[in-house]
Amino acid sequence: MEMRIVHDSSIVYEFLKNKTRYNYVYQFNNLSQKEWQNVICFGLFDDSELKEIAMLNTNCGIPVLLAASFENQKNSIELIKRIKQFLPAKFYTHINREVLDEVFSQNNISELEEYMNMGLSDYNPIESKGVVRLGFKELNDIKELISVSYPGAWLDDELVKLNENFGVYDDGKLISFAGIHAYSEEYEVAAVAHVTTHPDYRKRGYGVKVVDALSNSLKNKIKFIGLNVKVDNFPAINCYKKLGFKEYGKFVACEVENNI
Image (cartoon, rainbow, N blue to C red; front, side, top):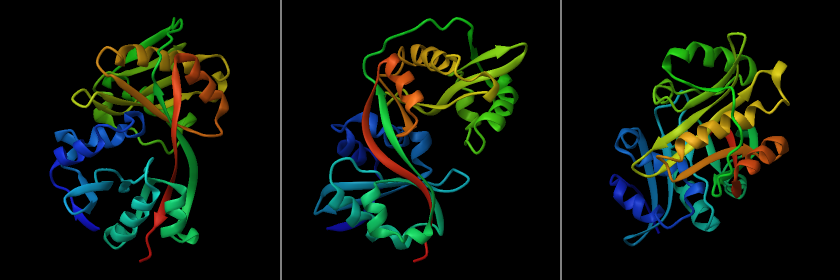
């Protein structure tokens, strides 16, 4: 087998098109012209056949390696071993636990969390009274809430401009929010993200309401609506299931110090 940089996004699409799209929402999003220019895509080839991919997003504060595989761990391990020397000194990654353990030293891994992909495969709407659509003019409100209730979250201002953001206000203060982390009508994918409620207002059902309003808006334009959730966040998982999200593949997310 041979590792090559894949410059043609159509080759990657052919590799991904028959896979469970809820497991690869971010990879499909990266195929869009706007995102592809910021991606280095590594491919593992058997002659001319693409067997595995890993995408390095370079337009984030810290580079992000999308390397989780949900089919062939052997190929994934082989690819990550081959590209390790080309990866940044520090990066964030979505990856399989087995691959992480095989390729990287545990001493170089931090902030490790296990996540699950969920996909809206059987939408079950609820009553979302009081939820409003938010746009770029509400950006400061969104950032203020996230700074309190979801510190460290990476908010893409350009995605906020798409107006696929929903929230709940109380006495002029934004207290609950849901937005998106990826969006491509061309590849029919979107990722729900930044679902958060102010600590003083939790356990009142606001989170499920804002996700419902967002899902209801997205479903008119997007076929595959996905999200990532920590595997031990059972309240959130149960809320998502109420709306019709189902469980798919698991992966770990962490920061890696790449001491080659």
